[in-house]
Image 1 (tube, one colour):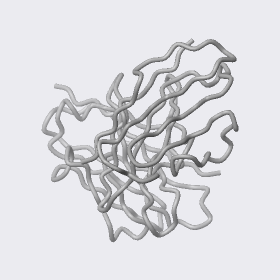
Image 2: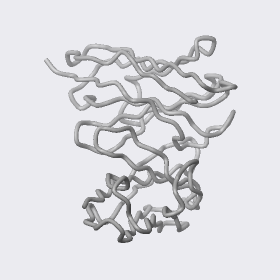
Image 3: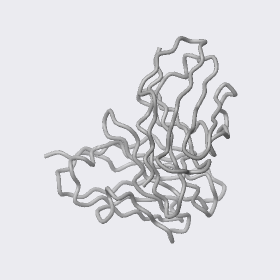
Amino acid sequence: QVQLVESGGGVVQPGRSLRLSCAASGFTRYSYALHWLRQAPGKGLEWVAVISYDGSKIFYADSVKGRFTVSRDNPKHTIYLEMNSLRSEDTAVYYCARDPSEVVIAGYFEHWGQGTLVTVSS
Amino acid sequence: EVVMTQSPASLSVSPGEGATLSCRASQSIGTNLAWYQQKPGQTPRLIVYGASSRAAGIPVRFSGRGSGTEFTLSIRSLQSEDFGVYYCQQYDGWPPVLNFGGGTKVEI
């Protein structure tokens, strides 16, 4: 079955950087867009970014634009979230999620990983 | 940006009763709306997409309705496993700016 496994979370000081990974498996074709979302402690869900199946289309939420970068390595079935200039308000569980449509971006989230916690604190 | 507003913020229901959750969009989004369930300590799970289509494996007691700006998720005869927080999410427009509502907590 579809599996998404995030890694790379941890405690980081404000202003520093961190890179998250999401390894995908269980697809017969890796032609799906993948999203990053986050959830601050005790708060609701926030979409962060999406990368199309071939990496040609990438979109970000305004709250992270210019600080976060998404990339993907299709032979490794992995996507990454490079987070720079981290702030305390970036503290959250970060989820990777698969879009339901092949090739195009539908924009909702059919499968989710378990998440990885990022804590930004001095 | 489309703002999603859910009501009520919380809802107390007894097992076996029904519940109706509401979600309003600040502008028309057609039927580009999804609902998710999140239990404490767990990952969100897709319940409904396209405003009214149940996701794979979702029981028929869940039903979504609506279009434009007003949407509802109804749960008929709540089971113990249905308690948690429900979020609506819009996915209308291009480029994608994907927004969630604040959630409705369904509790015993």
